[in-house]
Length: 120
Image: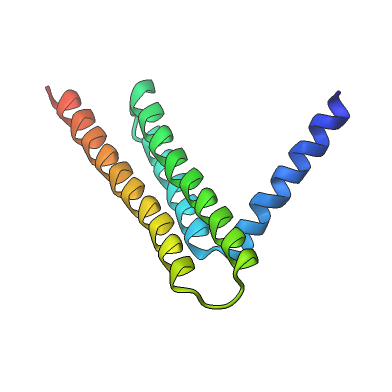
């Protein structure tokens, strides 16, 4: 049982490494996420504030992984340029962009709340 889990975890790590090596945006989002999480902990954010930021960061990183899955799948199905494939890739990139903007909004609101609460 442990051996099966270890093999599954190794496969998952290989997939994440694959995306890390090939997707610049994934690397940027992970690095920003690590920076933001470190900052929230160093600046004394509350437990719930840190959890809120962690959820927002996780959603963006997860969406980027999903976007990478869709891109790989579409490139496999249609290796040549296709307007339809391009549209689908644009839509999944749009999902990542929107979720990133929502995460940024959550971050800004959390920082405002934190410093408003601290100053009162």
